[in-house]
Length: 128
Image (tube, rainbow, N blue to C red):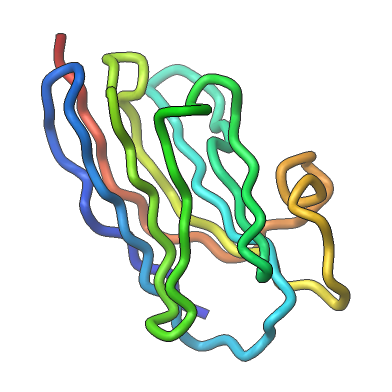
């Protein structure tokens, strides 16, 4: 399984970026996909999650500003980030957890899912 992120960059506060994650090498259609981020000196945090049904879940810090989506035909995961603030600065990673059964998206965001596959990350820098 390979995950490759793109779309990061440097923007001013209030700006937007669309992150992409191209996935390949898997066949399972039961999964959690997620976007995580890590700022320097801080722990990694999950910001947005989606399951195979397209149900979504967001961290409170990004709710209403970020939107996770997927294009199953293209095997691509997206994260639309709007109204960015300097606190959104960090390395953004997409990750995948492949499962034996279908789960509700809250399972993906709760810490119960084991995200075994990770991309290399894409940097987002927001200046004030």
